[in-house]
Image (cartoon, rainbow, N blue to C red; front, side, top):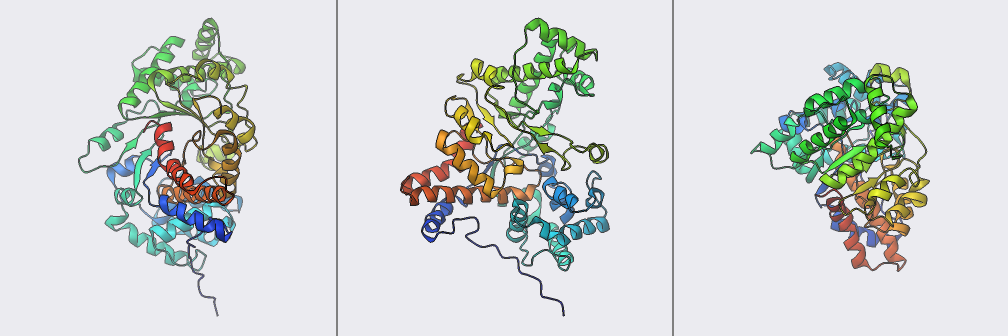
Length: 473
């Protein structure tokens, strides 16, 4: 006789402290922030999803195929990415169901991970699932979600309102004309706020095989002659202004390092022209990228876009997978972090500039207390970004909060950043952060290090004030 399906039950106190005395405080703090609107100033949701409000096609397209947090661990467990629909666009109904079955039959591999926490929250709180995913329950859950996806209240715009999203930032190429954002803003039936983010990485990576083509396209879109260095800079300034005019509040930069060594004007011009001609030496190409990152900081002081740095990732670590499935498919791997000396040229010039806001993220926990918190504890422009990507997990968040707060306090941090492509994971991720911060603050109260009224103010500020001020919202 088969066992009955295990129930899927979310405990009301999940992630809150186990100690009864601290738990009571944490419950009160969490209650004050649980229902507050979501401010999401950095993420990767496609704005066209909200413009067209097309129903999500199937559970696999919503939970599996686009989410590299999910697909990478399934791949590590022997599932082929092709079976999950990665890089293939929309799956046919039978393939989508099979991809979902693969997720459910491998549910055990997510034990103890934040992915498990997010997925359970989404399944239970959004779609009313009451049984634990498994090979035996996969079809039952699939059918229940698929049925709900046909209903009006589960269309993207309805979920946006249900999730209480106040602001949602997307990530966009500098050559994007942003017509989708403009159409959303002009739509009288739409009341949400969706803003673009200027992401110029590919146009700074001078050593990339596609850089010459990319920078020519940038110049064409900007209406600028990019055969010389000054035109390259002018094109960037022009596109940043275009983004600002369409509501952008930040630029995002993700390179292997954050060195910002300046070049002499003649050297910058020489290397740039060599790069345009396809003759730049690899070392010079890196030097020009570092110099241009410094230029981006200068531009930020002039146009007010908050500058976020997400460095230290070896993109496309597995070349065969990159060639077959493309980027952002689960095989990017962290590198060691280094900020103090690499950022010094930028901070020497602009670190005390009243118009600069610089948010530093890392995938290397060793720099939390050694570099990031001390930098944010002195430079008025610097904020420590919330744990990102591989560190967006309960224990890592707790370590981050403890390491950073002792040197920089709460006000020198960014507020929570969900950084997700998976639309339905947004509320689950923000809820996780609110629970963890409530627990941390409760411990400070229980240890007589903070009064509860101050802890309450801090809990609310971390959800509302910090992201709003840091990102100019």
